Length: 121
Image (cartoon, rainbow, N blue to C red):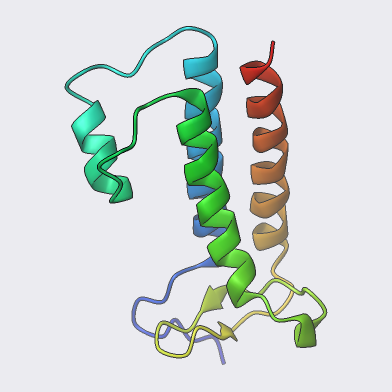
């Protein structure tokens, strides 16, 4: 009865995107700046022309991704994480309590903690 819904967003990939942004924040916090050729690409990908490539900008971008994910996780579902989000309704869909979704979300939160710590080190 597994169904993929023809291209729905996945919880685990959404959390992985947040992790990537937090990892970038950690790199920038260590003094590695965003290349001038890469900055416009980040601005375009994040749809934020004001994105400056600073550590706090990457953290804010990751926070936005996780906030959007939280928006789709219903309190009625007791904060369970499914496999997918229905692209039309935004409701969680398919495999309930997918371990990989939890793992990626927890990893994103760990990466966030490390990014904030690196920013203030």
